[in-house]
Image (cartoon, rainbow, N blue to C red; front, side, top):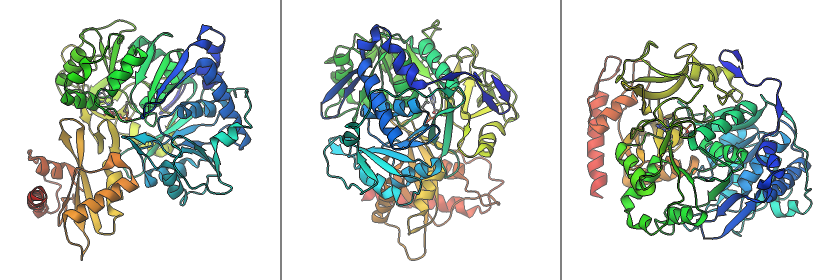
Length: 594
Ligand code: WT7
């Protein structure tokens, strides 16, 4: 490691290629003829790719990108549903040394445009749609809309998935199947430096602008390869299913790079977890004899509600290890997961990590030696990870005392920077406590040193495990012509962990009504995407602010949740608190009455 705080560089001088490590190496072993990818489409269609087939496809896709002029260092944006073409394109980008930016297909026009613009992508890859709950996601239409505000994009490659009619822009849009006719079967993997970026993935922070997290190639791969061995005990004969979308970091590491580097078989499922019935996931586990299953607490809680009859129908005896990620898991859900899905036989690895950490940091590790598990605790930091919990001044907290989670030493999967904004990188992660990486989470250690994660300590929400900044939602809300100002808070939710509440001040001449609230909701869905849909919108006349004009979200939250309000010494206008309370109560009554 070369450590020029706060920039760490790993395996400096080393050369490698991620597609070579995930695909080519298996060509020289028995694994060439084993399954690399089991794919299950939502309507019930399926596709299986052996490593040899994956190798062929990755090479062919890489040749297409090359012919379109994509070279080392060029950025390619992938806005695709969960279809095999998504991992194939990621590996094809890696093969030619072009960093990919995957944009979650649940994001909408504004979120897509922001990301493509920030990364200055040359190519966007999308599809004529993807299936979700029997409906077709209009991805191509969203791309067409988004590209109206983007200059960098030269070509759009379109995958035919659904057969839905889409507009094809002359000279810009190209069908993948047409391009594949001219594809070549071999493209030499581009040797890249260990410190060349493998990908850029956007995540939410405390401002309205998402951060492009840049990951290296060498450090990232070494870190993930090791962690998946230690945490999941993954082997070449594992059938590994991570239910996350490839659009999040979990999908990058847990669907693509780590399992394939181990030569395991991965499962990719396109659609909704409970479609057409609440046993869809369990039928997939049975069908492919999944051995390692990795999902979110929100999903576990949702299936708890559906009841056991949906699970009992299926043979889940292939399972060996269960994983949880994305948000704290409550002990009740943990125990249910352990007993009903794991049938009391499978350890649960509750894995704490972030987009920024690249891979798993704190988790049980059955692959190296299992410690006694405590439902709701992520247990101990993994080997090499120097994590701690500190107070406001940066001093280690005593056992049982809540503080902030920090990491004391760089690790190989650590982000390299924020794309195009090293100052923001320094400020966000390294300025709160100089020399310590600030994760933005509350945590606590118990008497035995076990770590317990206690939710975000900043203005970032976790909605069904998906990360979204309050500022991002607020800026979408104020784009609506009726709104002058808005504040967003997270409300605890028994299934999703948190849901979104919006407090909005209307412009002169607009009248509060349920109709206007639903218009604003639709507007948010259109700008950011369904992940950001609020549970409710409350219209207020003023918002509590500090004297310097900062909205005090914690005060609004206390009012809405009816919890103690705490210190109000920095509040500018005390009446605003009462105002929020009154407006909130009245409007809630009115809305509930309708
Ligand atoms: C945030 C990171 C990389 C994982 C997917 C989410 C929360 C993540 C846990 C866990 C409690 C967790 C934290 C973290 N989180 N895993 N096991 N227990 N909280 O990646 O979108 O970058 O979100 O997710 O708050 O900071 P992300």
